[in-house]
Amino acid sequence: MGNKIQFIDRLRLGFAVSVAKSVTFIVRSLRLGAASVLPGSIARRIEPRILELLSQQVKNGVILIAGTNGKTTTALLLCTILERKGYRVTHNSTGANLENGLMTALLESTNLLGMLNTDYAILEVDENIVPRVLKPLQPRIILCLNLFRDQLDRYGEVDTISKRWTKVISTLPAETVVIPNADDPTLSNLGQQLPQRVLFFGLNEPANYLEAIPHAVDSIYCPKCGHSLDYKGVYLSHLGDFTCPKCGFTKSKPTLESSEWSQILVGLYNKYNTLAAATAAIELGVDEPTIRDTINNFQAAFGRAEDLVINGKQVRILLSKNPVGTNETIRVVTQSTDKTTLLVLNDRTPDGTDVSWIWDVDTEKLVERGGTLVVSGDRVYDMALRLRYSQKSPESSINLIVEEDLRQAIATALEHTPENETLHILPTYSAMLEVREVLTGRKIL
Image 1: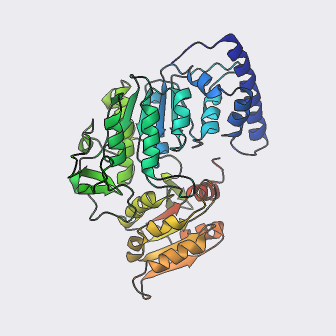
Image 2: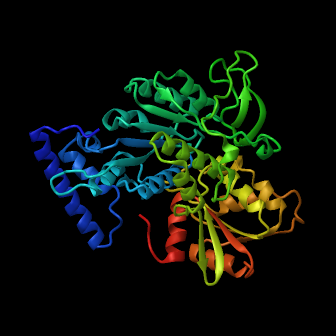
Image 3: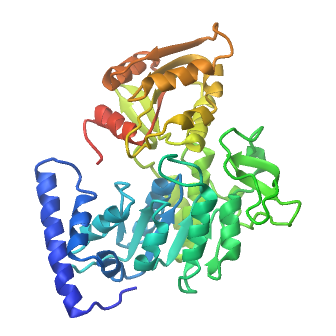
């Protein structure tokens, strides 16, 4: 943290930063995008060590947040907590979480000489690149949120990713603090193996157990011996209270008592995000009253349980990009009395080109409640077919509307939403950006 940089490195870094900032200015001036990736890519060609050289200048250290779901919400909450204490925080808030995106976020906070003036850098990191960025970043804290199957065409199984994480994290300095999810068997096991200081977060709320283990389950076997785990109950997917009857492996004890912490965001999955951010903030020395007050007044990141008012009607956007996340957003929808839902399924690079994951989603629960379901997106007919197969009988009360044109689909869904109800929109990642552009008239990326 705050290491000095050699003179020759400073010259090369200054040149790389100047070029990157010029690219940013041009891209934004011409309205070609948010310049959240390209500047970093160009700067890296000029100075290959730019990620290391910039992260060394972060005064109080880098906080790395990795996992399949919840990175953006957790990062924004922790960022807000630290900013309320007067700290300057650098954050890749656009969600660009590959190497070039991390570099671009750090570049935003530098001057033309490559001097970085920030107290903390909170970086959301794609789970697959964690092993590549740990060494240059040398994070002070690593938050490991969860590991689920996400984009089937891009990633291996969760145990493979976990093994890579364990191997690389174990080589970091002893003072590194690792905060894994105790309710995730794979990550609980990871934390138990590490030589560094490890804090855990998780739930202890049996009242919130699911009635049954859902279809979208990735890890119900012991990561130590391979035997089936015994669950007292599950909170979502494979996250729950577990033990192994064969080798004795069991859930790690969370640092915080979850029942003592409130949340303002909808969905049990956001309780995990809240606990993760709170655990990290306490480790950084932030007082509990500030943390609790920030949580109780927090607003969701774009597309993550984000509430908008459009034409006088309430709209809630719930990012749904994989089986586990979509099951949880469906749980939010079915727990409400609102009867209109828009599902938008794309298969672009940010989403993953393999959409077969929708067959692991418990769409039956959405169909059983009836109401109006509008579907759109690049793979609109795949989603429509999935919903049709979710009907127990042809006489189901569902009103399924298939609309290829997204703008028209949004208009149709709004027309079917009564004044006193909320329209829930469940889009994949690229679809969420399109939906927000239509609704708000501006792009995010």
